[in-house]
Length: 226
Length: 226
Image (cartoon, rainbow over all chains, first blue to last red; front, top):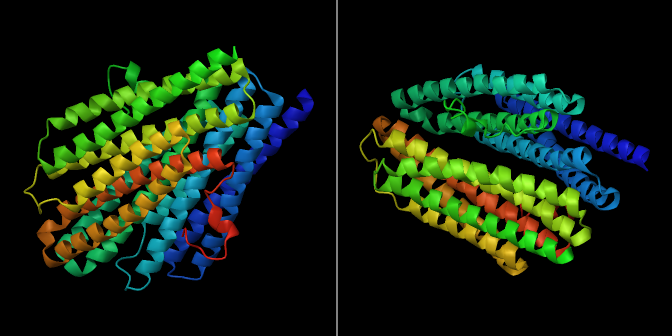
């Protein structure tokens, strides 16, 4: 029985990993759709979203089944509830990729505002954060999880820079407004993907170190997490 | 023991309700900070956020304790995992209110762009959705939950209208760009709050009707949920 449960956990973990990989693929496709001005890529993103939605429901049902059947204690319980939350985060990552591709389809109707450099860079960083957050979860690696949290600062920095640059475009030339706002929203979508990776890593650190760092600043004199 | 567990569930539900009420208060304060140009209200929002963060950690720990100690089956298990997810959604609602107040503080440094009408309307709707989603959860009322999902369409409609109006401002007068973008982002924050209420209601319907409507469009020929 115990043995069986280990196998079931392992299967759940590998399904999460697969879902994370689809999420990364969706981010990549949605940014290529935007940067290469290739509308056809959006179809793939929509198809993959349906798959992720199916997977989320299946994984959640399996977690409920295991909670009821195996009645796991302490460590395994914490692992299952973490999988429940990570499952939810990954489904929202896929939602964000769909939002990006919808903005991209809108942007393709208009001439290119500027060659994209920071947004693809931010997307690569977001993909890496998703990959690392899942690796940190599978390997129970708190150090890697902390590394992902630090990557999030870089994403925020890029997000601010993109925002300022696009504000400059809009202020100088009103014809750029609609396109610049779309790009600002794409940048927000990527920021939210990075936030989901950070959420996952907070769960990993919680499990590994047995403490909740999510709101660690509550206990500290300086509010470094604000 | 069974009796005791009922009391524990009841206590968890009332703590969620309290958290939802704080969330609504934070939405109200953040929009008043913006609409009444009253920076002092932001302090209250930041204070309430710390309280919500504490509550989230406490509720999650209590859920883990109950899962391990009571080893609940079927219905109770589904209830506890729903509480775990709702807890998470409510904490994110509070985050959105903080984002709004940060934008508001930014906007207060500049002259008023226009009197705000649609944004406070959208905020009232978002508050009502949060309240109704929690009521639906406590009373296990699928009809009320469905009503919340319909309110979300109205929020999306308002969000689109605000976006179009502000795009018009920016295109006509570049001096309005920074303020208009800030208002667009506030409107997105409210839209996300409404999404969290919708998530909660999907959980309620899942529990009450024993099925997962989250991705119901997967099974239907028309994609009405796209």
